[in-house]
Amino acid sequence: MKNILVVGSTGQIGSELTMKLRREIPQSTVVAGYIPGAEPKGVLLESGPSAIADVRDAAGLAEIVTRYKIDTIYNLAALLSAVAERKPLLAWDIQMNGLLNILEIAREKGVAVFTPSSIGSFGPETPHVGTPQDTIQRPRSMYGVTKVATELLSDYYFHKYGVDTRSVRFPGLISYTTLPGGGTTDYAVEVYYSAVKGEEFTCPIAPGTYMDMMYMPDALHAAMMLMEADPSRLKHRNSFNIASMSFEPEQIFAKIREYIPSLQVRYEVDPVRQAIATSWPDSMDDSCARAEWDWKPTYDMDSMTVDMIKNLRLKLGVQ
Image (cartoon, rainbow, N blue to C red; front, side):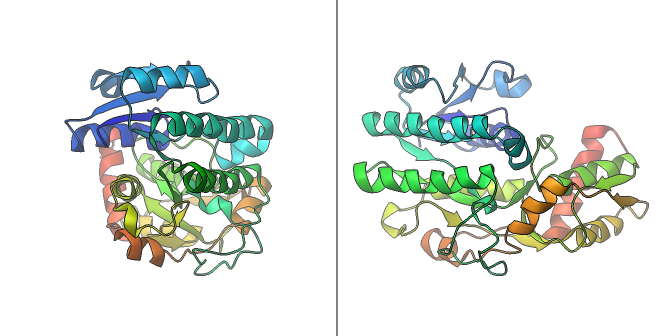
């Protein structure tokens, strides 16, 4: 990776990934792609080039790829799960028509493409515990449908045209840097904010609902590590299960109370998010990622909680 375009660079993953790429590959050019209304700010704007990169504008994307001699695209443009259920047509347009534009540009210009999938690509018929790498995928949300289609279309362009497509199925992602934006697993971020600020937390997910989760530093490492992996070892390009920890709400609340005993929680279950969460795996088997490109997470629930609380106290100015 030498000249990289991050599409969706101001989102939850993109904002942190762009900065990590710039720090860890300093000899590269990392372009922060954004859409009007979601412009990069602060260090994200000041530390490198940026450009309007709407996935639905094929000509505009192609111009950026040509201008900066892009060899790798991280395509992070998507609506998160709960938002996608409210706006299914927009979700399809961004995720699928946008991906098709990117893959066509990649085919024409020899660009590698990372387009993440998700635990949302699975459905209620999928084995929920130790979800296999290769298994039935019949999601019942528009978010999940687009993720499955993303995997299939990316594989098609690899097998048909030789486009270097790669992806992972992200679990729920937890980060102190960027606020969540409408995902089913967002409660696991929001509760840390409430705990640090001393506010009661209202949980939209029912107790006993297990979901795979991952701390953002591990997710970013996985995205970069896969794109730099030896292609001759990859049997599952689109898309690899990756896992770190699985918990239900009461477990993460109990872990936070080990450090902030005053945390107060009440449940107000959101039926839309709960239906999505119930259809997702409790835990994924990531043995293929470990075997094919040496994936291994660094953080567990305890080390993540310590780091989240420390950094949120600094961010929010709370002792």
